Length: 291
Image 1 (spheres, one colour):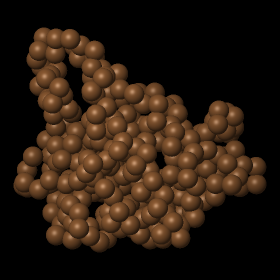
Image 2 (cartoon, one colour; image 1 turned 180 degrees about the horizontal axis):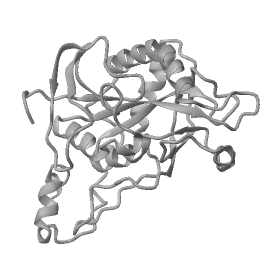
Image 3 (tube, one colour; image 1 turned 180 degrees about the vertical axis):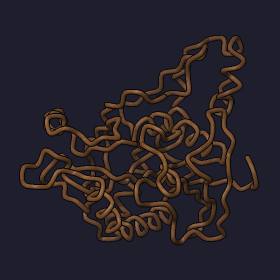
Image 4 (tube, rainbow, N blue to C red; image 1 turned 60 degrees about the vertical axis):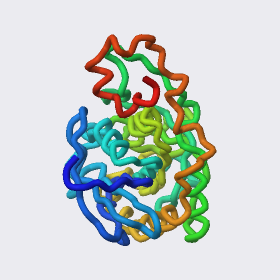
């Protein structure tokens, strides 16, 4: 790690359209070396209210990375290195339901993984672990987001299933209809493997899903396009910044009642971790308290 001894409690990962936090004070940028390569960009550290926070633009500043190119493992590992206990992701999504309208916010509670070619675990190569992922989002930080929506009068939906596709292309009309039949409410490209890796890193993780379009299932709405997404994201920037401020003011990073911080306690199956020294060294940050 270069340039700082600061530790953070809360980190925001910004998606399309959100590349900085307006009210971040005492800001500095740091790069963090990880066993999984470089992060999407330098991480901004600073204070927001009374809490030390970090901000990482998922696609890099200037939006340089496709969803499949985002170094998810490096990003989560770097935030863990900085001491992060809670990650709030902000992402653009399409709606698969009539009642979920563009410019609204969804605070999802479930995920469907329809990605195809992404590294989705820190484990393997001699170390086996299976974390529980029945409830992929932290229930405590989810409620902080819901309360932030309420206090800022944001139009929102509490709960919903997000299907995550590989991209970068948007769905075909048949795919969009299929996802609706599966019970998905919104569609995105980045919540996975991010949420899985955060769980393996024992970091609380929840998502603010900013609805930008109706995907392409809707007969009476224009099919989604990149320009449509960007235009609606620009309209939602002020909403994002308000929510970020409220979340930082209300988050509790100590004494959480969730189980995210002990996700690996019953997950590790390998009995002789020392027999895979290279693998153990690579993820010692995650396993240190168990070996």
